Image (cartoon, rainbow, N blue to C red; front, top):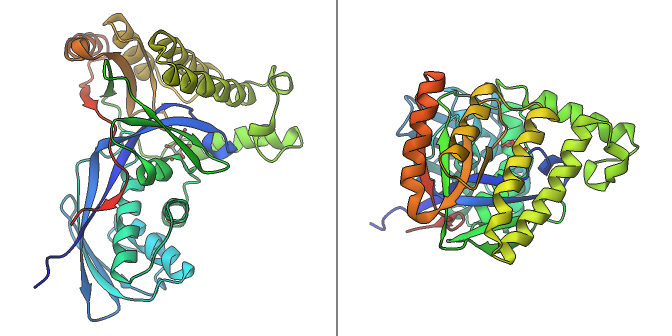
Length: 356
Ligand code: GLA
């Protein structure tokens, strides 16, 4: 018998560009070397059956996408039902499939574990049915699946990064044009992700509210999105000021990576964190403390990553001392907050693919 193919999709870390993807802005992100894997076996009936190594129970839904995603049980199956429905709407034939899902992307950390599940399952379901999507379609499909499944109005950066990553590279992503520029990560630089020990899920966070507040600024200015706002228009409006200055920082960060100007990266990350904290109000004291501990320990810069309100901070540092920086920072943070942080060094990885 032919072995069942496996599909993988990585998590991601946003290096800079917070709360701007839904304004069709620019971000610099990194597909990381932690991923979701899905083994897919075709079934003779028209059912999609999914099992997860991390969760109990099996999801059993119609392959034609007729099951309502938010009503799907167990809970983790909502994403599978979302993907199944979106693909059916795009024209996938209702071919049955058995999905065996495993993941080493931390959940509730801001590393896009759910986008990775959706991208990997979308690839698996498409492949089994001989249905082909290009990268942009796959990312948009996975994003829509998340909207359908959880109601969280996420932007496009998580899915695009998971689909389009390249090993050893960060990605400069234009969220309007869905254009990607791969930027080599200098070998002397390492990327450290530290979980604050404060869990959060997007669903339970004020993410949707912040997004609505930020979109209200665009509406007030007569714009569809803040990508089209000028600095003068938002100077006195904190939510708008965050978006516009953050997009400027993203451009400066990408330019610094292109020119290997490592000294410029840290201050841009710190300015991004300050703006996320003060103007966008998506930080919490624990994330602020963790950023401070990392910088005191020798990181070039650090900022909250993902939606905020908990989860992870990302830091850049010199490759030869990352271990020492992580040790010092986590020790300090533990002493200051009583929380238990977890640190990982991550590397740029390839985007989603079929691996067997
Ligand atoms: C979450 C969303 C993304 C993005 C970030 C904030 O991770 O899924 O689309 O909006 O928050 O930058």
